[in-house]
Image (cartoon, rainbow, N blue to C red; front, side, top):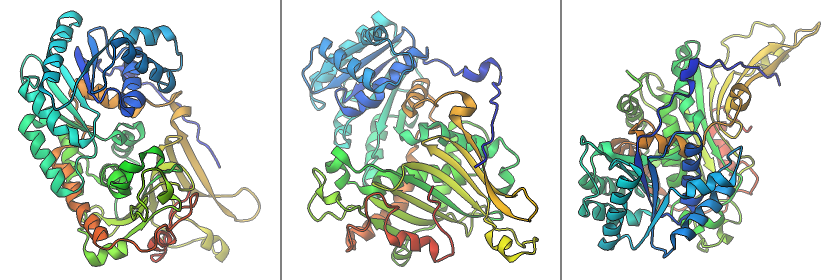
Length: 506
């Protein structure tokens, strides 16, 4: 494989000129949970180390568990040591960060919890100069959203937009279980918050290589003209994991791969891949174009669902902790999807996601049209010509790969396939930031570009709910249907093979 060496050119001092976060208090509901310990606090810690949050910043944890402040700080510091991945780790940094942490215990449905929370926030505003700016993060199950939001409003902790200070709320997925529940959740949120205050987070959108889809498309005139049905035969979007459900059996058995991955992660990536150029780089201009893609998805009907959707479950899933005996929850999904608009009419998008597969990889691959006529005379050369494939790797080994044909050096006319490969680590000299770092910083700065808007959430659920309803009414009879370490059920291979195509198994 040939590797292209790329010299990254810094566009002047502005290369790192992301605005630092304004003064604010970051309030985490569910402060003793796994998400806070593994993702949120390490992200905030790295923003602190990098200088993106300053001294006029505070973290306030809220949880039911009765904890002394020192015990809470120690739990967070232990998590930082395990999960922060800061290259130059120093215990004194964690100790200094710990001094920024405070804690309030209480039930989320108890108004007195919010009386204490309000008092603590007023103290932080005075002592740490957080300016009345409050970012609330709901790192809780969806069942807790309503009592938290209503009690925040009752305690006058939600200030209307446009004032001297601001209130924003980050809501973790899932945003509902289907179209009906998503609409109900959005109705609840809209009763308490203005849409400009609402940040529905999907950590996939914070990945550097997901964001780079737009840059790659719209900053390179060599690629944008061929990014359409005239040159692309089909598009493949893959999110494969090698691990099983682990300790998430109870949650996963009620959710499944269609809700957990396809409805949000894969459809978000599909939108970025298929959208039209926005008028500006503004949040709503970008989200408007993504919404148009969701509205252009061909509706699934009962007769097309059977043909275009394959579900699977890995052998051994039913033996995982907290998974029901005889469960028909899918751990694998493959779909053939069409975007019925001018650019993509007739081009299939093959989506694939699953657990316990052969390789951990998330990527987008554009399989280009074959050449219309082979010029090289020899049948063996013509038969071996493979179409170009452009792959954007989201994880791991983030980067971009282009495969193309090249003559093999020698006296005979032999053609081989060559890979031109760019990785972020080589090109830019280090790992890209973690997704939560970028998303939390954007939420503090009020930039909603990488967050889901209400209409897009409802549009994605509206499209996928008929598929969910169909399989709940017609549960698969062949589960488990694939072996751990394979690429999924055999029916998924048939999904592409019947049209003479194939999955790009990397």
